[in-house]
Image (cartoon, rainbow, N blue to C red; front, top):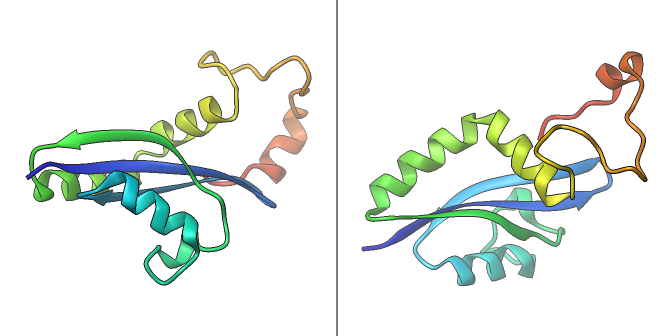
Length: 112
């Protein structure tokens, strides 16, 4: 049975957020997250999520295992979030958005 692991992203008042999950039906699950109802995970309610990454796996167990690894891979999630926001893979910000000063970066950074 085919299963999927996915990463969702959304812009929020405190920056860009990501959510990692697994499902058997990707379209249905995204609709559940965006409906704001009880079917979506509690941490995703009240936000408009978009799919930023998905993998198809052969079994539920493989999807659950991959979800566990993706939740702990902050580097990949940060890169996916940067790409979804329009930043390049090279680590530089677009021209219309200046880089924060090095002294303020640590005080303002947030986990993705």
